[in-house]
Image (cartoon, rainbow over all chains, first blue to last red; front, side):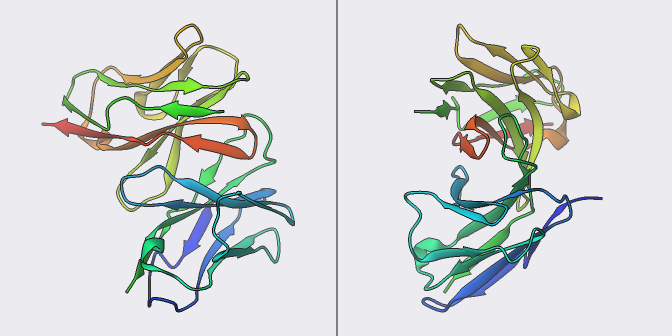
Length: 114
Length: 112
C-alpha cells in the first residue's frame, strides 16, 4: 500500500542536542508538510515543500529546519531542542497542493526532550 | 482570515446513540472543509471532505457531514456510535491547497 512513513515513532533527545526526524512517502506526491502537535492541541503547520521549493510559515522558529533531498524523503531538523519542543511531529503529503487536495498523514514521531 | 471552531472539546455518547460533532468555519472564500480522525499515538486519517460538490458528504466508517453555507457549519454525524469510534476528531479548512487550518479537536468517548 502507498503510504507515508515516519521514523522513528518515538525519539528521545537531550536539551540542546540536535535531532533529525525522518519522513518518506511512496505516494509520489509533490508536496510534503511538517506539522507540530502538542498535547491536546491542533496540528500546527511548520513548513512545506512543493517539489524542491521550501515554504516556511511565518511563525516557525528558526530552530526548526527541513531538507528534502528527493521526492520521497523529507527531514525535520531541530537544531537545539528545548523543553517546549516536546510534541508529536506529523508529516503529511498531498498530490499537488491544489484546492481540495487531501493531505495524507504519517503516524507521527513523538519527541521527548529531557 | 480562515479558521474553524469546534464546539465541545469533549463529547460522550452511549454506544448505539447518535454522534454529532460540531464545526463552524470562517472563510472569505468558498471553503474546502475536511474532517480527520486521530486515534491515540497515530497520525490523522481522512474521514471525508467537502469540495463544493454535494452539500451532504458521506465518508468512511458510516460518518457524514452536511455543508450549510447559511450557518457556516460543517457538522459531523453518525447515526449509531460504535466503541471503535472513540478518538479525537479534527475539522479543518483549506483556503488554498497548501494551507490547512485545524480546529482544536473534539475527543469522542463512547460509553458501553
